Length: 93
View 1 (spheres, rainbow, N blue to C red):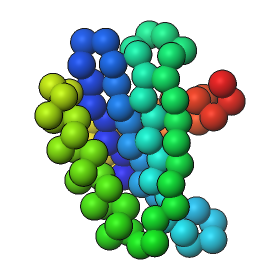
View 2 (view 1 turned 135 degrees about the vertical axis):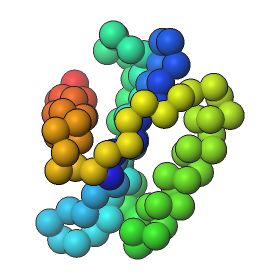
View 3 (view 1 turned 60 degrees about the vertical axis):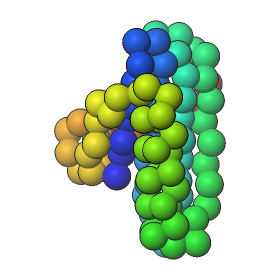
View 4 (view 1 turned 180 degrees about the vertical axis):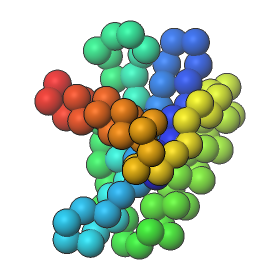
């Protein structure tokens, strides 16, 4: 699952996925649109339910900050694959 929020200048992207060991990973990327400023953080969740709770918390926070949800997709859609490509670029920066 990939969810992205944006304002005119900033973005937050969350990706929830299972790694090859079956662990649930909550990845959060953030930054300024059109720049290299931002960050990336991965957290290991005990369960998918816990990762979903973190996503719900993130949605509440971003909505309170005036961010709008612009993407909410699964990994296997074209939009999800493009978001994954962009997220993977952040790992090498």
